[in-house]
Length: 396
Image (tube, rainbow, N blue to C red; front, top):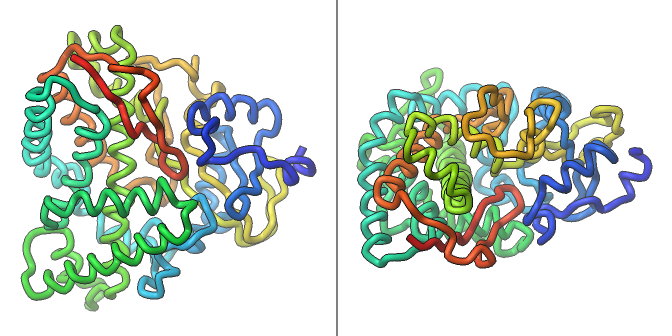
Protein backbone atom coordinates (compact mmCIF):
# COMPACT_ATOMS: atom_id res chain seq x y z
CA UNK A 1 0.00 0.00 0.00
CA UNK A 2 2.49 2.61 1.12
CA UNK A 3 5.13 1.83 -1.48
CA UNK A 4 2.79 2.82 -4.28
CA UNK A 5 1.05 5.55 -2.28
CA UNK A 6 4.30 7.48 -1.96
CA UNK A 7 4.55 7.67 -5.75
CA UNK A 8 0.96 8.76 -6.27
CA UNK A 9 -0.53 12.22 -6.38
CA UNK A 10 -3.76 11.33 -4.59
CA UNK A 11 -5.16 14.76 -3.77
CA UNK A 12 -4.86 18.50 -4.21
CA UNK A 13 -6.40 20.43 -1.35
CA UNK A 14 -6.88 23.42 -3.66
CA UNK A 15 -8.13 21.32 -6.58
CA UNK A 16 -11.61 21.83 -7.94
CA UNK A 17 -12.78 18.24 -7.46
CA UNK A 18 -11.42 17.93 -3.93
CA UNK A 19 -12.89 21.25 -2.81
CA UNK A 20 -16.29 20.40 -4.31
CA UNK A 21 -16.64 17.03 -2.58
CA UNK A 22 -13.80 16.04 -0.26
CA UNK A 23 -15.95 13.47 1.61
CA UNK A 24 -16.11 11.32 -1.51
CA UNK A 25 -12.31 11.38 -1.69
CA UNK A 26 -11.91 10.51 2.00
CA UNK A 27 -14.30 7.55 1.67
CA UNK A 28 -12.24 6.18 -1.23
CA UNK A 29 -9.00 6.62 0.70
CA UNK A 30 -10.40 4.73 3.71
CA UNK A 31 -10.88 1.75 1.43
CA UNK A 32 -7.64 2.10 -0.55
CA UNK A 33 -4.91 3.57 1.66
CA UNK A 34 -6.02 4.69 4.33
CA UNK A 35 -3.25 7.33 4.43
CA UNK A 36 -2.97 9.10 1.10
CA UNK A 37 -0.01 10.94 -0.37
CA UNK A 38 0.33 14.00 -2.57
CA UNK A 39 3.35 15.44 -4.35
CA UNK A 40 1.68 18.85 -4.68
CA UNK A 41 3.11 21.90 -2.89
CA UNK A 42 6.15 20.15 -1.46
CA UNK A 43 4.38 16.88 -0.67
CA UNK A 44 2.23 15.72 2.24
CA UNK A 45 0.43 12.78 3.83
CA UNK A 46 -3.31 12.76 4.55
CA UNK A 47 -4.78 10.36 7.14
CA UNK A 48 -8.54 9.97 6.84
CA UNK A 49 -9.50 7.76 9.79
CA UNK A 50 -10.49 9.27 13.13
CA UNK A 51 -8.11 7.15 15.22
CA UNK A 52 -5.14 7.87 12.95
CA UNK A 53 -5.75 11.62 12.99
CA UNK A 54 -6.08 11.62 16.79
CA UNK A 55 -2.91 9.54 17.17
CA UNK A 56 -0.92 11.92 14.96
CA UNK A 57 -2.33 15.04 16.62
CA UNK A 58 -1.48 13.75 20.10
CA UNK A 59 2.03 12.62 19.15
CA UNK A 60 3.62 16.04 19.52
CA UNK A 61 7.11 14.59 19.87
CA UNK A 62 7.03 13.05 16.39
CA UNK A 63 4.72 15.40 14.51
CA UNK A 64 5.71 18.91 15.52
CA UNK A 65 4.19 22.32 14.89
CA UNK A 66 7.38 24.33 15.21
CA UNK A 67 8.35 23.74 11.58
CA UNK A 68 5.16 25.27 10.19
CA UNK A 69 1.44 24.52 10.38
CA UNK A 70 0.49 25.44 6.84
CA UNK A 71 -0.76 22.57 4.70
CA UNK A 72 1.85 23.75 2.21
CA UNK A 73 5.62 24.04 2.48
CA UNK A 74 5.53 27.75 1.73
CA UNK A 75 6.41 31.05 3.38
CA UNK A 76 5.20 31.25 6.96
CA UNK A 77 5.36 33.83 9.72
CA UNK A 78 8.78 32.63 10.86
CA UNK A 79 10.16 33.22 7.36
CA UNK A 80 9.26 36.89 7.62
CA UNK A 81 12.53 37.54 9.46
CA UNK A 82 10.60 39.40 12.16
CA UNK A 83 8.66 36.70 13.96
CA UNK A 84 11.17 34.10 15.09
CA UNK A 85 8.38 32.44 17.11
CA UNK A 86 5.96 32.27 14.20
CA UNK A 87 2.36 32.41 15.43
CA UNK A 88 2.34 31.04 18.98
CA UNK A 89 0.86 29.02 20.49
CA UNK A 90 -0.25 27.15 17.37
CA UNK A 91 3.13 27.14 15.64
CA UNK A 92 5.35 26.29 18.61
CA UNK A 93 6.03 23.17 20.63
CA UNK A 94 6.46 22.68 24.39
CA UNK A 95 7.67 24.24 26.57
CA UNK A 96 7.01 27.52 24.74
CA UNK A 97 3.54 26.34 23.77
CA UNK A 98 2.29 26.29 27.37
CA UNK A 99 2.98 29.86 28.42
CA UNK A 100 2.08 31.40 25.07
CA UNK A 101 -1.26 29.57 25.11
CA UNK A 102 -1.99 30.83 28.61
CA UNK A 103 -1.54 34.40 27.36
CA UNK A 104 -4.56 33.89 25.12
CA UNK A 105 -6.83 31.73 27.27
CA UNK A 106 -8.08 34.46 29.62
CA UNK A 107 -9.49 36.40 26.67
CA UNK A 108 -11.21 33.28 25.36
CA UNK A 109 -12.76 31.98 28.60
CA UNK A 110 -16.55 31.45 28.76
CA UNK A 111 -16.88 34.51 31.00
CA UNK A 112 -14.88 36.73 28.64
CA UNK A 113 -16.77 35.46 25.60
CA UNK A 114 -20.08 36.21 27.30
CA UNK A 115 -19.00 39.85 27.56
CA UNK A 116 -18.39 39.96 23.80
CA UNK A 117 -21.90 38.76 22.95
CA UNK A 118 -23.76 42.13 23.08
CA UNK A 119 -21.36 43.73 20.60
CA UNK A 120 -21.56 40.67 18.34
CA UNK A 121 -25.35 40.74 18.41
CA UNK A 122 -25.44 44.44 17.61
CA UNK A 123 -23.14 43.85 14.63
CA UNK A 124 -25.33 41.00 13.39
CA UNK A 125 -28.44 43.16 13.59
CA UNK A 126 -26.76 45.97 11.65
CA UNK A 127 -25.72 43.57 8.92
CA UNK A 128 -29.17 41.97 8.80
CA UNK A 129 -30.81 45.39 8.47
CA UNK A 130 -28.69 46.05 5.38
CA UNK A 131 -29.57 42.67 3.85
CA UNK A 132 -33.31 42.88 4.53
CA UNK A 133 -33.48 46.45 3.22
CA UNK A 134 -32.13 45.23 -0.13
CA UNK A 135 -34.50 42.28 -0.27
CA UNK A 136 -31.73 39.87 -1.25
CA UNK A 137 -28.19 39.05 -0.25
CA UNK A 138 -25.23 36.73 -0.16
CA UNK A 139 -25.18 34.83 3.12
CA UNK A 140 -21.42 34.38 2.85
CA UNK A 141 -20.20 37.70 1.42
CA UNK A 142 -22.69 40.05 3.07
CA UNK A 143 -22.95 38.33 6.42
CA UNK A 144 -20.69 35.42 7.39
CA UNK A 145 -17.53 37.06 6.05
CA UNK A 146 -18.32 40.36 7.75
CA UNK A 147 -18.72 39.02 11.26
CA UNK A 148 -15.57 37.35 12.66
CA UNK A 149 -13.17 39.90 11.21
CA UNK A 150 -15.05 42.70 12.97
CA UNK A 151 -15.47 40.74 16.20
CA UNK A 152 -11.77 39.87 16.36
CA UNK A 153 -10.87 43.43 15.38
CA UNK A 154 -12.99 44.82 18.20
CA UNK A 155 -11.38 42.48 20.73
CA UNK A 156 -7.98 43.72 19.59
CA UNK A 157 -9.05 47.36 19.69
CA UNK A 158 -8.63 47.78 15.93
CA UNK A 159 -10.82 50.20 13.91
CA UNK A 160 -13.74 48.52 12.14
CA UNK A 161 -12.92 50.38 8.93
CA UNK A 162 -9.75 48.29 8.60
CA UNK A 163 -11.78 45.09 8.26
CA UNK A 164 -11.63 44.88 4.47
CA UNK A 165 -7.84 45.04 4.65
CA UNK A 166 -7.85 42.11 7.08
CA UNK A 167 -10.08 40.07 4.78
CA UNK A 168 -7.60 40.48 1.94
CA UNK A 169 -4.65 39.40 4.09
CA UNK A 170 -6.45 36.37 5.51
CA UNK A 171 -7.53 35.14 2.08
CA UNK A 172 -4.01 35.60 0.67
CA UNK A 173 -2.45 33.67 3.56
CA UNK A 174 -4.95 30.79 3.60
CA UNK A 175 -7.21 30.56 0.56
CA UNK A 176 -4.61 31.61 -2.03
CA UNK A 177 -1.60 30.19 -0.20
CA UNK A 178 -0.35 28.52 -3.39
CA UNK A 179 0.49 32.03 -4.66
CA UNK A 180 3.78 32.11 -2.78
CA UNK A 181 4.65 35.73 -3.58
CA UNK A 182 1.17 36.99 -2.74
CA UNK A 183 1.16 35.07 0.52
CA UNK A 184 4.56 36.42 1.54
CA UNK A 185 3.48 39.97 0.71
CA UNK A 186 0.31 39.59 2.79
CA UNK A 187 2.30 38.26 5.76
CA UNK A 188 4.65 41.24 5.53
CA UNK A 189 1.81 43.75 5.36
CA UNK A 190 0.00 42.11 8.27
CA UNK A 191 3.10 42.18 10.46
CA UNK A 192 3.83 45.81 9.58
CA UNK A 193 0.25 46.77 10.49
CA UNK A 194 0.43 44.89 13.79
CA UNK A 195 3.74 46.55 14.65
CA UNK A 196 2.00 49.90 14.42
CA UNK A 197 -0.89 48.71 16.60
CA UNK A 198 1.45 47.29 19.24
CA UNK A 199 3.49 50.51 19.31
CA UNK A 200 0.27 52.46 19.87
CA UNK A 201 -0.79 50.19 22.78
CA UNK A 202 2.55 50.73 24.48
CA UNK A 203 1.77 54.45 24.54
CA UNK A 204 -2.00 54.22 24.96
CA UNK A 205 -2.97 50.90 26.61
CA UNK A 206 -6.66 50.09 26.84
CA UNK A 207 -8.72 47.05 27.81
CA UNK A 208 -8.25 45.13 24.55
CA UNK A 209 -6.25 41.95 23.91
CA UNK A 210 -3.26 43.76 22.38
CA UNK A 211 -3.02 45.99 25.45
CA UNK A 212 -3.04 42.89 27.64
CA UNK A 213 -0.17 41.36 25.65
CA UNK A 214 2.00 44.47 25.87
CA UNK A 215 1.42 45.02 29.61
CA UNK A 216 1.36 41.47 31.03
CA UNK A 217 4.50 39.84 32.40
CA UNK A 218 5.59 36.20 32.30
CA UNK A 219 7.81 35.20 35.21
CA UNK A 220 8.54 38.85 35.87
CA UNK A 221 9.52 39.66 32.30
CA UNK A 222 7.55 41.43 29.56
CA UNK A 223 6.34 39.33 26.64
CA UNK A 224 8.86 39.49 23.77
CA UNK A 225 7.84 41.67 20.84
CA UNK A 226 7.91 38.81 18.32
CA UNK A 227 5.57 36.75 20.52
CA UNK A 228 3.12 39.66 20.82
CA UNK A 229 3.13 40.16 17.06
CA UNK A 230 2.81 36.42 16.42
CA UNK A 231 -0.16 36.03 18.77
CA UNK A 232 -1.82 39.09 17.23
CA UNK A 233 -1.35 37.67 13.74
CA UNK A 234 -2.70 34.30 14.87
CA UNK A 235 -5.83 35.86 16.36
CA UNK A 236 -6.58 37.47 13.05
CA UNK A 237 -5.67 34.65 10.69
CA UNK A 238 -6.97 31.73 12.78
CA UNK A 239 -10.00 33.52 14.19
CA UNK A 240 -11.46 34.90 10.99
CA UNK A 241 -11.57 32.51 8.01
CA UNK A 242 -12.32 29.51 10.20
CA UNK A 243 -15.38 31.08 11.84
CA UNK A 244 -16.76 32.79 8.76
CA UNK A 245 -16.49 29.42 6.96
CA UNK A 246 -18.47 27.74 9.76
CA UNK A 247 -21.15 30.46 9.76
CA UNK A 248 -21.33 30.38 5.97
CA UNK A 249 -21.68 26.59 5.98
CA UNK A 250 -24.49 26.89 8.54
CA UNK A 251 -26.45 29.28 6.35
CA UNK A 252 -25.70 27.27 3.21
CA UNK A 253 -27.12 24.19 4.90
CA UNK A 254 -30.24 25.97 6.11
CA UNK A 255 -30.81 27.49 2.67
CA UNK A 256 -30.42 24.07 1.06
CA UNK A 257 -32.44 22.03 3.56
CA UNK A 258 -35.86 23.55 4.31
CA UNK A 259 -36.82 20.73 6.69
CA UNK A 260 -33.81 21.39 8.94
CA UNK A 261 -34.33 25.15 8.69
CA UNK A 262 -37.94 24.93 9.79
CA UNK A 263 -37.05 22.60 12.63
CA UNK A 264 -34.45 25.02 13.99
CA UNK A 265 -36.93 27.90 13.74
CA UNK A 266 -39.73 25.92 15.39
CA UNK A 267 -37.48 24.26 17.98
CA UNK A 268 -34.80 26.80 18.94
CA UNK A 269 -33.55 24.41 21.61
CA UNK A 270 -32.05 22.42 18.72
CA UNK A 271 -29.71 25.25 17.76
CA UNK A 272 -26.78 24.03 19.86
CA UNK A 273 -26.90 20.49 18.45
CA UNK A 274 -27.37 21.93 14.96
CA UNK A 275 -24.18 23.98 15.41
CA UNK A 276 -22.23 20.93 16.59
CA UNK A 277 -23.40 18.96 13.56
CA UNK A 278 -22.38 21.81 11.27
CA UNK A 279 -18.95 21.73 12.88
CA UNK A 280 -18.72 17.99 12.30
CA UNK A 281 -20.25 17.78 8.83
CA UNK A 282 -18.69 20.94 7.36
CA UNK A 283 -15.49 21.03 9.45
CA UNK A 284 -13.40 23.80 7.91
CA UNK A 285 -9.87 23.33 9.27
CA UNK A 286 -6.96 21.08 8.29
CA UNK A 287 -3.64 21.68 10.06
CA UNK A 288 -0.11 20.80 9.03
CA UNK A 289 2.59 19.15 11.14
CA UNK A 290 6.10 17.94 10.32
CA UNK A 291 7.65 14.57 11.12
CA UNK A 292 10.95 15.16 12.90
CA UNK A 293 12.16 11.59 12.49
CA UNK A 294 11.55 8.60 10.26
CA UNK A 295 8.38 7.04 11.62
CA UNK A 296 5.20 5.14 10.85
CA UNK A 297 1.57 6.11 11.17
CA UNK A 298 -0.96 3.29 10.93
CA UNK A 299 1.72 1.18 9.25
CA UNK A 300 2.56 3.88 6.72
CA UNK A 301 6.28 4.75 6.69
CA UNK A 302 7.10 8.46 6.70
CA UNK A 303 10.43 10.24 6.49
CA UNK A 304 11.94 12.99 8.57
CA UNK A 305 10.74 16.34 7.20
CA UNK A 306 7.52 14.98 5.71
CA UNK A 307 4.45 17.17 6.06
CA UNK A 308 1.52 15.34 7.69
CA UNK A 309 -1.94 16.89 7.59
CA UNK A 310 -4.21 16.78 10.62
CA UNK A 311 -7.30 16.01 8.56
CA UNK A 312 -9.95 16.82 11.16
CA UNK A 313 -12.70 17.14 8.52
CA UNK A 314 -11.96 13.64 7.21
CA UNK A 315 -11.89 12.20 10.73
CA UNK A 316 -15.32 13.67 11.34
CA UNK A 317 -16.76 11.58 8.50
CA UNK A 318 -15.33 8.27 9.74
CA UNK A 319 -18.20 5.76 9.85
CA UNK A 320 -16.44 3.83 12.62
CA UNK A 321 -16.99 6.81 14.93
CA UNK A 322 -20.14 8.47 13.61
CA UNK A 323 -23.29 6.58 12.75
CA UNK A 324 -24.50 7.41 9.25
CA UNK A 325 -21.45 9.67 9.03
CA UNK A 326 -22.20 11.19 5.63
CA UNK A 327 -25.68 12.30 6.70
CA UNK A 328 -26.41 15.60 8.45
CA UNK A 329 -28.40 14.69 11.58
CA UNK A 330 -29.65 17.85 13.24
CA UNK A 331 -30.17 16.25 16.66
CA UNK A 332 -27.22 13.84 16.63
CA UNK A 333 -26.90 12.59 20.20
CA UNK A 334 -23.25 11.51 20.25
CA UNK A 335 -21.02 13.98 18.46
CA UNK A 336 -17.39 13.93 19.62
CA UNK A 337 -16.17 15.76 16.54
CA UNK A 338 -12.67 17.11 16.00
CA UNK A 339 -13.58 20.39 14.32
CA UNK A 340 -11.52 22.29 16.90
CA UNK A 341 -8.69 19.77 16.87
CA UNK A 342 -7.49 17.55 19.70
CA UNK A 343 -4.59 17.53 22.12
CA UNK A 344 -2.50 20.49 23.26
CA UNK A 345 -3.16 22.44 20.07
CA UNK A 346 -6.95 22.24 20.34
CA UNK A 347 -8.40 25.60 19.28
CA UNK A 348 -8.17 28.11 22.12
CA UNK A 349 -10.96 30.16 20.55
CA UNK A 350 -13.64 27.46 20.43
CA UNK A 351 -15.85 29.31 22.95
CA UNK A 352 -15.70 32.45 20.83
CA UNK A 353 -16.42 30.60 17.60
CA UNK A 354 -19.46 28.86 19.06
CA UNK A 355 -20.80 32.15 20.42
CA UNK A 356 -20.38 33.87 17.06
CA UNK A 357 -22.12 30.99 15.26
CA UNK A 358 -25.02 30.94 17.72
CA UNK A 359 -25.62 34.69 17.70
CA UNK A 360 -25.21 34.92 13.92
CA UNK A 361 -27.83 32.21 13.38
CA UNK A 362 -30.22 33.56 16.00
CA UNK A 363 -30.21 37.01 14.42
CA UNK A 364 -30.43 35.75 10.84
CA UNK A 365 -33.37 33.45 11.61
CA UNK A 366 -35.12 36.16 13.62
CA UNK A 367 -34.95 38.47 10.60
CA UNK A 368 -35.29 35.92 7.78
CA UNK A 369 -36.78 32.62 8.95
CA UNK A 370 -37.66 31.58 5.38
CA UNK A 371 -34.95 31.70 2.72
CA UNK A 372 -33.41 29.51 0.05
CA UNK A 373 -30.55 29.47 -2.42
CA UNK A 374 -31.13 31.95 -5.22
CA UNK A 375 -29.10 29.80 -7.60
CA UNK A 376 -27.44 26.59 -6.35
CA UNK A 377 -24.98 26.68 -9.24
CA UNK A 378 -23.73 30.11 -8.07
CA UNK A 379 -22.50 28.76 -4.72
CA UNK A 380 -18.70 28.65 -4.60
CA UNK A 381 -16.31 27.07 -2.10
CA UNK A 382 -12.72 27.77 -1.12
CA UNK A 383 -10.30 25.01 -0.25
CA UNK A 384 -6.86 24.55 1.19
CA UNK A 385 -6.21 24.99 4.89
CA UNK A 386 -9.74 26.24 5.54
CA UNK A 387 -12.67 25.00 3.45
CA UNK A 388 -15.90 26.98 3.39
CA UNK A 389 -18.42 28.68 1.11
CA UNK A 390 -17.27 31.92 -0.46
CA UNK A 391 -20.54 32.87 -2.13
CA UNK A 392 -24.06 31.79 -1.08
CA UNK A 393 -26.64 34.00 -2.87
CA UNK A 394 -30.03 33.63 -1.19
CA UNK A 395 -33.56 34.85 -1.80
CA UNK A 396 -36.27 35.39 0.78
